[in-house]
Structure formats: structure tokens, C-alpha cells
Amino acid sequence: MLRQRFITAVILAALFLSGVALLPLHWLALCFALVATAGAWEWSALAGWNHRVARIMYALVLPLLLAGLWLLLYVDRDVERTQPWLGASCLFWSVAMLLVRNYPAGTWVWRPAWIRSLMGWWILCGAWLSVIFLLTLPNGGLLLVLLVVAVAAADVGAYFSGRRWGRHKLAPDVSPGKTWEGLWGGLAAVMVVTAVVWASMPKSYLHIRVETLLLMGLAVAGASVLGDLTVSMVKRASGLKDTGSILPGHGGLLDRIDSLAAAGPVFSWVMILVYYSPANK
Image (cartoon, rainbow, N blue to C red; front, side):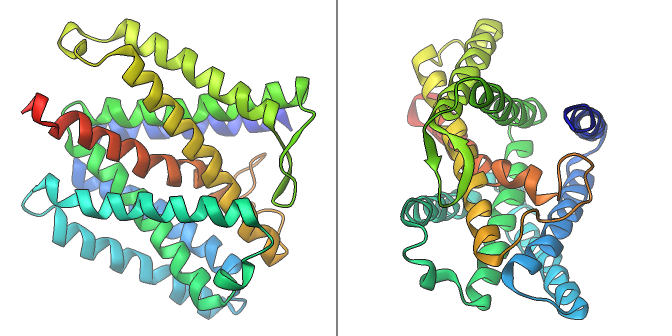
């Protein structure tokens, strides 16, 4: 299984890096919209839509929402318009943290199918929006790659440290396999990656203190764990083990992008503070 996961991850990484390096913004927006639409198809099952036609209709709503966001926010490239939308997405994840923390208490709040449907659209729209926002910034492709690397480091660090030292359950009612030791291992891995990034930064970026970068890394790593736990919570409530089987060794697409869906808005909001703070204007 580990070998299969590795091969799939390498293929996905090659496709991702090629797209970021070669495609212009509007084509990348389209490609990531297709990925988000596939995620919406998987989420439709988590929301409780069982009929194929209903699931297709649910998934097809998402590209319409994304097209609306593109026309509203990016036709005139006014990047700062995105700020309140990203802030609202971060607020959602703050609420999700409370839901995960109190599960199964409070399930009644989001168990109705229409609420879970809205949750899926909101999560996927926020993920897509954060990716497009990063790509509009200077060195946006590099920023997006750094986000993916940080999330991957948190995942890999948590996996191996959890297998080696995992004893204390992080959220047993949501995801019994996750441990506090795995969480600390993931955070440590991100700290190492962050330190390497800081040491490799161009001189023009050295006004960003290493302490700031480390806090950014911690925020992104914590958000990635929250995204994973939130989708696991909804899967558990829906009686599903995986969101799908499209990715060999990984399960469904949502099982791979759930961490990015939460980490993306948080990372993008931090980038707003970096690029648009008074000190940098």
C-alpha cells in the first residue's frame, strides 16, 4: 500500500508542478475548478445525496459558483477584493474546529443534508479561491508549491511519527488512527521545511523574520490537520470510510485535498498580511 501511495503521489506531483510551471492563470483556474468539481461529486455522497442524478446536479453547481467568483473577483485583477472572502473561509474553519472538538455532540447542527451540501460548496470554493489568490501574487506559483510542500510535510511527518511513537489519541471519536505524537511529528516536519525555506530565501525577502515564518508554518500545519479531521468527521457521520477510490492507495480525491482545503485559506490570509501590511506598501 505504501508503494502504491508513493507512485500515485509522484504522478500527482508531476502533473501539479507541470501545470503550475507551464499554464497561464486562466487555464490553471479552469484545471483547479475541474479538480474541485470532482471533489464536489465525492462530497455529494457525504452530504447524503444517493441518486446519481442528484449527485451530478450537486457537483455541477460548483463550477457555476466558481465562475461567479472569477467574474466577481478576478476579471479586473483587483486582488484585494479577495480578502473578505478568504477571511470568511478562515472563520468557517474556526467553527469547524469547534465541531470536531465536540463531536459527536453538536452533530445535529450540520447533519441535515442541505447544511452538509452548503458545507461542501463552501469548503471547495474557499480552497479554489485561495489557490487562485496565491497565483495572482508575485512568485505565486512558488507560493502555491510551498503550501503543498508544507501540507505534504505535515502529512508525512504525522504518518511516520504516529506509526513509531503514537500512543495518545488525538480525536478518537473522529479519526481513531490519529495521535498527538503524530501531530507533533507533523508540526516538527513543517518546522524543518520552514527553516530550510528561510535559509534559502532571496535577500529581498529577508525582512520576513524566521519567527514569523515558523508561526506561518505552524498555522498551515495545524489547519491541514483540521481539514483532514473535518472531512473524517463528516465521513464518520455519513458511515463512509473513504470519499472515493479514484486515487490508488489514497482513496478519493477529497481524501487528498481535505488538508489543502483548510490550509489554503489560512496560508492565503497570512500572505495578505505579508503583501498588504503597511510596512510593505
